[in-house]
Amino acid sequence: MRRGAKIGIITGVSVAVLAGGGYGAYSLMGGSDSGTSSAKKPRTVVAEPPSAEQATNGAKDFLAAWAAGDLDKAASLTDDPTAATTALAAFRDQVKPSALTLAPAGPATPQAFASATGTPAPAAKPSAGASATPSAGATPGATDSPSASASAGPAGVLMGFKARAEFAGTNRVWDYNGFLNVVKMSDDTPAVHWAPTVIHPHLSGSETIAVQQVFAPPSNVVDRNGKPLQGASITPALLSTLQDNAHKLLPPDPNKDQDAGSAVVISDPAGKTAADKLFTIVEPKPGKPFKVTIDNNVQAAAEKAMTDLGGKSGSIVAIEPSTGQVLAFANAPTNGQNRAFTGLLAPGSTMKIVTSTALLEAGVNPDTVVACPEKSSNAQAIPNSFPGAFPNNTLQQDFMVSCNTAFINQGLTSLKPNTLSSTAKDVFGLGPEWKTGLPNADGRVPDPGANKDEQAMNYIGQGKVQMNPLAIASVTATVQSGEFKQPILVADLPQQKAARNLSPDVAGKLRAMMAATAQGGTAKDVMAGITDNAGAKTGSAEVAGVAVTNSWFTAYRGNIAVAAEVQGGGHGVDAAGPAVAALLKAAAGR
Image 1 (cartoon, rainbow, N blue to C red):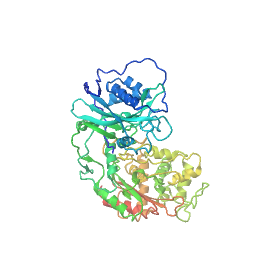
Image 2: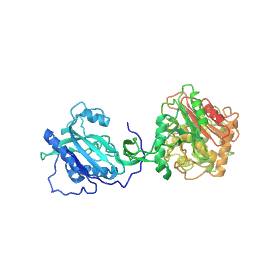
Image 3: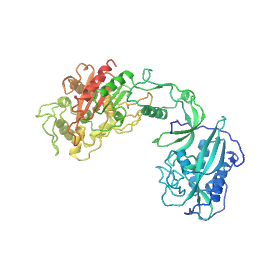
Image 4: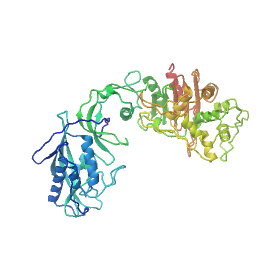
């Protein structure tokens, strides 16, 4: 199984020359990879397989040239000299063995190759010249495997070899079994069918192989207070990903680098697959504790809040507004998707925090009369979740009772079609990629263009608007502090900046509106007893074809902001609200 390792290429290795019976060896200093050869007619692979003797000689000659450092010659003995030259030179320059010894091992079986690569063995005899579909970013003409499928194509002979690499400054040697396929060319000569797996069985065309820095696993993982981390939702897989990403994202630390070892590692430049540590050259020093921003006490409250949902699916996130540090996150169920970070659902009326921001910045005030009719003015005529019309409501009163029609009509009157999406991005950081330490789905507020119905749905958090508790908790944290601080799970991770902060005037009005909602609006009952320096917003999100709405709730109290969603939980105060309130009570005093 592949295991992660961090990057830091080692330099300054010395060179040795080896020779042995049946083996070839090269000196990186004395060997040449710039030899010349006379021009030859283009060769092509033919369908007929090589004879056993040709296969043996083809493998032997290729390995001898590679081991001798004559990369041009080695590449010329393949069916794709250009790709082979690039790959062999990259191995020489990035792995930097001080000596390389290669020995033919005779014919190999598909089962042996499958075992080395961790892929299923083909049912039929391998057809070495047939090309498999390359991985994304693969070198054109190179396949991920020298063994071929049973599809039509030139046949080849699978051959094995034994590789030994030595490295300067250590007596450790790296031994591994290699594989290559020999095919027959149109000039009746054998050639190695080029594939990245010729370098190493694990290597694919989208990956690189190099000597990199590696670090020992942390001696233990601790919360922000130095206590052993606890939390069922923080699964071993998520924790491993967090550690791996933190090493990549944290700024260079000379003291940390002193603890690094080195290893030969296969990695994906795009970061889509885990690094594969093949061989440790220098052991790293014992790991130190890995500290995360989680607070065990808040985490325990978050976990309990999800357990108390009684089997419903949901998630919750708590953020420290002053820093953006994530204090807790939990999921129900704990062993499924990390929906707190990667879920994407319509956030319902919690989105009215962002809509209110846009309206306030457009000159509408909390005491401005914004009528609350029974249905909105757009063609879709969206209703409220309560009966009646309230023509004398102010914007703050509409926020407190979560009047859909008021926000839709005033948004269509006061805002341009793209204002909401630009406010979400420029003020709340929604849209640009966040590097929290774990994979996360960025909040989405698409530009509706001239479609009035889509504009209307966006203003109330329906339609194509999608969020998760991480995003909504961050929105609430931004209101509390007046400044977007991108959520992070490890202190000192780089944080995405928003284009601008909330003005003190708008931030103060938003906090007043959320405080009024907590004290006398839809959140009153849930927030009872926790209204000091606190604010809240409820949300219910409709889902097409589903009778029961999703429950959303977000609130802040002091230096903590929380958001939760419960799938099929009903109104915001029915399920998500009690979860958020329970967490705020447990975190009292922050």
